[in-house]
Amino acid sequence: MANDRFGRLIHYLRISLTDHCNLRCVYCMPEDMTFRPNADLMQDDEILLFVKLFTELGFDKFRLTGGEPTVRANIVELVHGIAHTPGVESLSMTTNGVLLGKIAQPLKDAGLQRVNVSLDTLDPVRFNRLTRWGKLEQVLEGIHAAESAGLTPIKINVVVVRGYNDMDVAEMARLTYENNWQVRFIEMMPFAGQTSFQKQQIVRDEEILERISKELQVPNIQNHGILDGEARIYRLPDAIGSLGFISSVTLPFCASCTRARLTSDGKLRLCLLKEKEVDLLTPLRAGASMEDLRTLILDGVWQKPWGHDLAKGDVALNRTMSQIGG
Ligand code: SAM
Ligand code: SF4
Figure 1 (cartoon, rainbow, N blue to C red):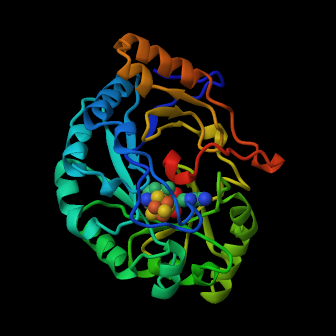
Figure 2 (cartoon, helix red, strand yellow; figure 1 turned 90 degrees about the vertical axis):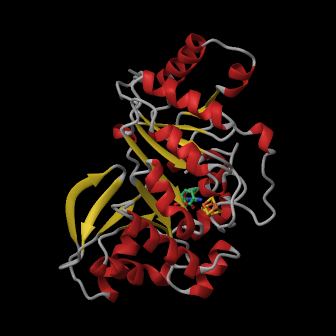
């Protein structure tokens, strides 16, 4: 079992399969983003070996992310390999949905259980502006393909950016009346490269809730008093789906954090919002034994930072969100 020095049991690993992406969301990366050469990224056999090692240390919940995980060559075979590793109980993916129309069913057949799809607005022009070149209809098609394939419950990730999609939050919430989706509003977090934009354009939860409440004429949106991972859950009256609020900046959930991340270049990142990382890929390629790697992981987890210091203005500047794996 992997415990940190604060007594938290860490058993959830988010693996970034690539830093490459087929979109360029304004809150995530600059338009002229440069990506790592493929040789610097973990290869399929290296990812599978790490998954095996992590399961041996008690990790049972895995999420595949990026960059955009679906642009990775052999994604379906890789998902199959991870899903069939003994000890992997839960396997999900966070994706922009662009390619799901084609591969949702193969991914489900390979063993993927659920998807979170990022979709910030239902307005095609604003969608294109936010993603710099995305086509809304591809993502909608992807979400429906995921639902038909049974990659459920579907969660929709909405990052709210002032001036880009803050006017759309009620429309996004309205989706829950007819769809059994969890529409999750995520507070924009600051990272390298985009820090001043992210700090200036952030929209806080209270403002989002107030706007939904006013525009949908629901005076008191019911807080279910429950958490789903990091999301606080609400429900509109008679809605079949739910709303989630993820407020890492204003309401951190560090005390209940159970996660670590493996970046696409094989670094174990202990906190999304802290620079501390442990290199696993270089030792693996240099011939480290499985025992050495296990020790590196356990020592790294033990040193997991308690939480972030965004309130003090302390921002992790060594990577963009896409290079960490959100
Ligand atoms: N490409 C996939 C996608 O967009 O879903 C997976 C990777 S993306 C980095 C993971 C999640 O991080 C997405 O839901 C995205 O909206 C979110 N994200 C990206 N930059 C962010 C930021 N600065 N603050 C908060 N969330 C962010
Ligand atoms: Fe790509 Fe996801 Fe970042 Fe958008 S949020 S640029 S889709 S990695």
